[in-house]
Length: 122
Image (cartoon, rainbow, N blue to C red; front, side, top):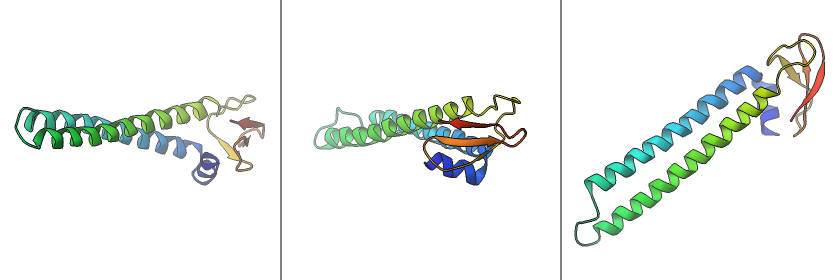
C-alpha cells in the first residue's frame, strides 16, 4: 500500500523519479562500501601480527553486509519502479503516467486524467 499512498500524494512521475534517485543512492552506497573494503584490506592487511587481522576481518565483514544490503535495496527499488512504469500507460489513449489513484490498496485502481479510462495498476 505504500506505493499507492506515495503515488497519490506526489503523482506518478515525481514518485517514479524519487524511486530512481533513491535506488541509485543505494547503488552509490554499495560502491562506496566496496571501495572501503579494498582500502581496508590494502592499508591494514592481514599479514600483521596480533589482533589486527581479526579487526580487519570484522571491518570487512560489517562493510560487506552493508554493501549486500545496499545492493538488495537498489535492485528491489529499481525493479518496483520499472514494474509500475511498465503498467502506467493508459490502454485507451496512450497517455503515460497521468492518472489518479482511486483507492490506496495493493491492487491499485487508477483513472486516466485525459480520457477517464480505469485500470488496475498491480
